[in-house]
Image 1 (cartoon, rainbow, N blue to C red):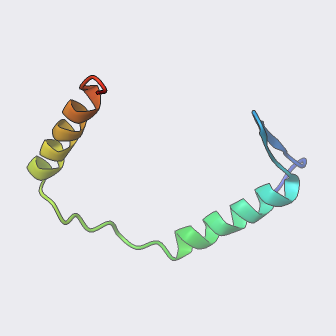
Image 2: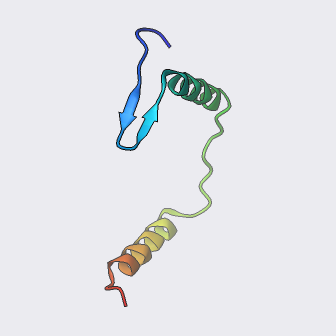
Length: 62
């Protein structure tokens, strides 16, 4: 990574400069070894599943 060292701070979670560098390296590797996403369901099947999930989570808890 170029530039000044960067630390990312989130509530109760801190990434050090080393963590950020390791993450950047992992992402670079991920992008060089990326594989295309292959859809196994139709758009209608995906939308139906999302609708069922939304209906389930919006029901009152028992």
